[in-house]
Length: 241
Image 1 (cartoon, rainbow, N blue to C red):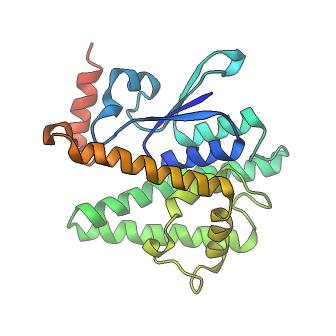
Image 2: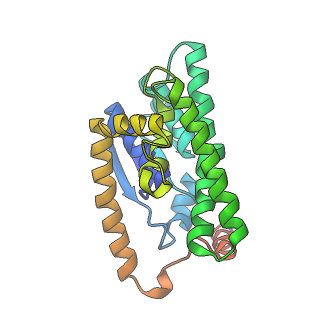
Image 3: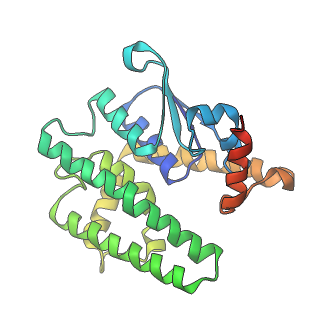
């Protein structure tokens, strides 16, 4: 059994998709990041970086429970555990890993910064810098897909699973078939997969449930994910010795 401690952000959704794709038994345990669950002592044991997602594999290496953080590391772990969505041949394997790291090193962080500056600040320099960098990265992605059916090459892999949730809404990224035809072909193919459809439906239900809990909670129970000083102070208090 895989216990997924998460919230349906893009990083949380990628693991939901992977678990649905592999057929592993799993369950979702809500970590409401809007209410500060990520700073609990229990969650910090699973994820010292006070982030989601994290997992506990109750039948990990050696048959013992095993805990992991970092969504792309978990994707790699699940791929190796099941022998799925990661090519066995060395060249194909390294092709997939390059694009898995592309998501975690470039696409995800830059999209996060673009979202922050465009939706939570009036800093035009930040808006321009990160919006333009995201556009550049999406052009890199388009160029890759123009030459390959899937991100990692000829087969669907954990690289596709990692990237898709970040690009789930092409309209919000100003992408269409006239400017990014390869991307739109890829996006349609990913969304046609039954496991992706199931995970998307579950993500919507989970988000609605957790957001309702956040919206109805007392104001002093809610936290700002963008207040990095407050987040630092919460982590310091939670780990004080």
